[in-house]
Image 1 (tube, rainbow, N blue to C red):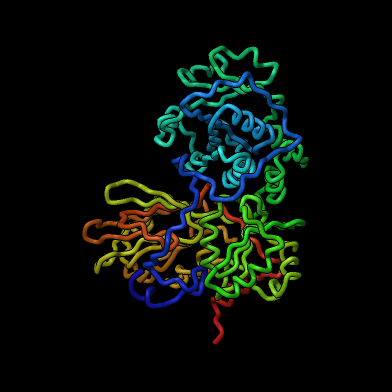
Image 2 (cartoon, rainbow, N blue to C red):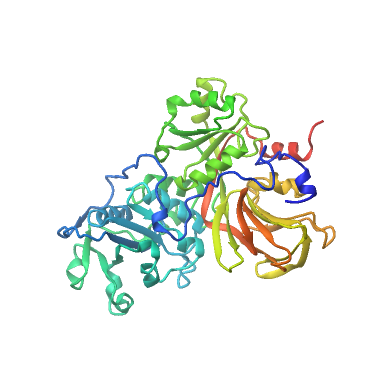
Length: 520
């Protein structure tokens, strides 16, 4: 920002070494759960075929002749949790469609009691279950992120689907007399068992499944303490067990994990000689295909970790960092971990503590009234772009908390980002797993003495300019400039999250203490 916060120099927190505030580095955009199917391409790596002998048998009717126009199947459902029968249906659809889009519904008001798992966990399980089936499968998380259920006809009109013939995938019971009118005029692909397929009305394509398992059956088994390993992909079972999902209790934010045959996708800071040397030690366990990895190993500083997260979070595997930078708040201390090949093997096979951390979903409004959105693991902010101080209104959960904040700017930060720019602006750093996030002012003139506020994980914060023309604002997201903005709206993401892995000896509280009580 501008003024005293800018003068504090280089950051000692999660962006050590980055100059503030006008960081002109390349934007590393994540694969967002929002509009734009064609933009959602798999970022490198060899696709992994998800085959499992326990999957229900799936057959289809006679293959359709290939047409000149590509065909797309829009497969919507709760997928709560995603099961092997869902995977089998995807595989069957791929036999006759050029692309399949799996889109989980958002919350269903008619069934609130049954909606007992945070959507951020559903999104993680769905990605793990579906995205590796085939490169032609796209997982669209817009309804989970927006807590809504999109209208089917509006989805057909999405510009990203131009050029496709769109078919809606429905189950056979969706064609009963009460609900058939919802699908009038739509092209349908009907999923039915061998017994039910004879009752499917003519004019629809059919996919015959050998079996189906209701999500309520799986959730009931889990609630009663039973397992579902025979009903869900192995990666989904691990998430359920790791976080204690569907057990009638709050999910575990932190959990332990061990990888007996670890495969690591290694990311390192090529400008850092220590990081480059360490990367060679990981070669026996390295894979060049990130989708094959059990872990993403990051060697460098906090900046390297942030870059890796923004690039690879959608792969849904833990990030294990080893600090070759300064403080390394997001990484493990290197002592005893990377002294040689034996130590590296011990690190990869050790018991790790995984911290499940949601990302920030941030929207920004341009002068023309249009809104853009993105995700960040650390922070986002607005700052004055002229000699005039910024006059801002700050709302929390639609309630005006600061009707006129006179300052150089305002930043929103996750707990993980609290040791970086937020700290240089005067906020107290938070432990990684603190169930809250920060709103921080820079060089606040009015109200006097206000510096920052802690808000709950479910809160929505909106910062809006009171004088757009006279006191223009610039927006930034994880250091990337957004241009001139008039408002910023932020909340914890409902679909995007990251797992950070630490060795058991890692003392997060000690790192916070070193920040707050620096040695001479």
